[in-house]
Structure formats: structure tokens, C-alpha cells
Length: 234
Ligand SMILES: [Zn+2]
Ligand SMILES: [Zn+2]
Image (cartoon, rainbow, N blue to C red; front, side):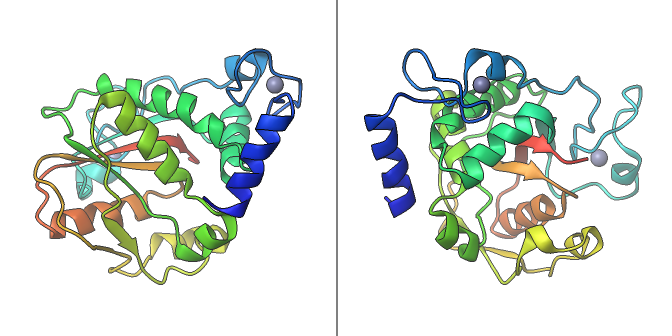
């Protein structure tokens, strides 16, 4: 347990919990946000490409880009848009130690996965790894916390089998540079269990990271890769 996580745990044990968004005192066992703020954490209406998760015309079977070049993953679900209270909840989770927010968010994403029209069901959950530099600074991986909760909700194992290489500071890269990630952004560090894999990430920007991570799993012999993202930035 990192110092930050320990500090957050001590704070929650000693002080009455407060909402991570509006700072109102929480009633009952801490769930990170008050009822009013949770009620404004809302999913997207349908209308995203079932292959890559990009916005698309809902009357089409998939987006135009996937028509030109199908993505390496076999399907993608996106729970919501990276805005409003969903964005605030993810930032609380990512930067301020409110990891108690992970469970309710993970359950929401798991419910979306359970209703996905995929021909097979995933048999294990793999988080997209945080860059090591970010993990050192923050003390935990947002995608890792979400993946653990999604896996628990679906009754699946979760495995941190992906390793991330020299991406630099992804958040400060321009959109154009993020699209051009080095080809070998990820590698697989241990044997991946057989069966369809569910790759989990917190925020999708351009989708390039998820494509690279999916390619790495495919390269390790995984035939089916599905992707679940909590929030899409576009
Ligand atoms: Zn609140
Ligand atoms: Zn698409």
C-alpha cells in the first residue's frame, strides 16, 4: 500500500466521509460521492461503434474508420462521455485518492459488458497498464482499480499481464502525437490464460492506446480481445 493510499485510508477511518465532488458529508458507509452527485454520473446513450467505441451514425453497423481498417479488438463498449460528473469522479479516483469511487464505477462498466452483444464471453480481465512514472507519482493505477472491480462483478479473474514501454507523458502529448504511438508500446510479460480477454481502461482519448494494447495481446496468441472503457473523451 502506498503512502497516499494509506493516508486516504486513515482519513476515511478518522473523519466522516465527504463527497469527492461537492464535499457534502456522506451518510452511511462511504461510496465516494453523495447521492446527488452519483445521480449525475450518467451513461452515454447508444450510438458508438461496436468495434472501436468511436461515435458513429447509429443507423450504420460500424464507424467509417472501421469500415476502412477494422481495429485489432473484436468489440468495444464505452460507458459514458468524459465530461460532467463522470469526469469529476474519474479525476477524484485518479488524482485525489478516492479509490472508493472505483467499486461503483466498476460495477456500472461491468453491467455494460454483461449486456454487450459479443459472440463469446470474456474469461479474464486485463487492465491497460499506467505508465510506470505516473504510477510512482500517484501510487495506484486507475485502470487497475477499475479492472479489479469489473472482474469481481463479472466473477472473472484479473491479470496484469501487459507491460507498458517508453510512451513518455501521454497526457501532455498532442492529439496527433498520441495517434502515432510507437508500434511496440506494450508487451506481454507472462503467459496469458486462454480464452477471450477483456481489456479495461478508464479513459479513451483517440483509441490508439487501446489498439496497441489489443495488438500486444493478439501477438501473444489471444484470439479474441474485447475492450471496456469507462469514459471516452470524444
Ligand atoms: Zn456530492
Ligand atoms: Zn469503429
